[in-house]
Length: 91
Image 1 (spheres, helix red, strand yellow):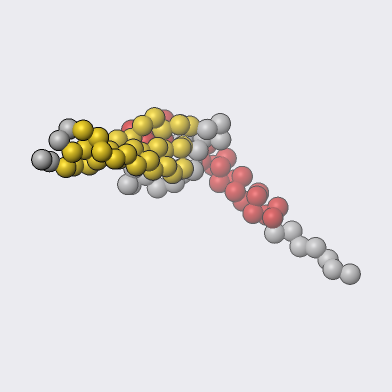
Image 2 (image 1 turned 45 degrees about the horizontal axis):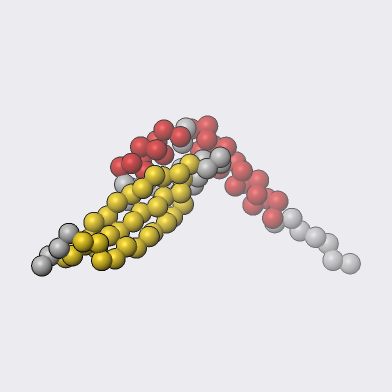
């Protein structure tokens, strides 16, 4: 009787703003039969650290995160931060 966990990454999905939705499924098998499945999801923004990501995710990120995409994303973050910190005068 052997029990082990098999980890798989399924279809990283790229959104129109170049975020990468990553879905990982962990399967626990006992004697070759699946006895448990756990889903894990996370999102990567353009330019995020890829050190702990699956090779498939890294390949997708390297293909779609061009320097221009990363620069545009960072610029949009600066604009958003500026827009949300507008001060108002209280009378």
